[in-house]
Image (cartoon, rainbow, N blue to C red; front, side, top):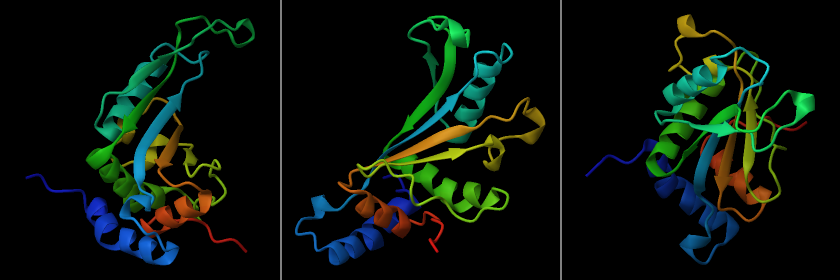
Length: 183
């Protein structure tokens, strides 16, 4: 039997009972949970040749999964974009890998951001999903600083089964997400 992720054990033993009690859920299946985490790197088409491959390599190092390269669906002349041209890459994480990544994000990567004062509690989409943008991939310890050619940002979307933003905010806060406190 494989060892479950530390954060998943924490979710089962502490977070789920706390949410059941606080929100007065009648059924354990009503308790919100993480469903998936999507990491996306968009690459400017005007940048140099190997930009998409470099971004894919970095994303692969961060997640441990092979990224999918996104292609442009239609040509847009104003953006110097051709149909079929590579415009970015993304990885979708689920189950154990998702919990491992979330744990690394909260415990090691976010504290390495310079002048970090917490994440915006207003980045929810209205359906219980949270998105955050990271301006530099070097906050992840898996990235070797010597091999970086360009700074590359990424978007991280955390999809939960919560019905409202309040439920999702409570779930993420209990799982250790460092939200900035409002004044």
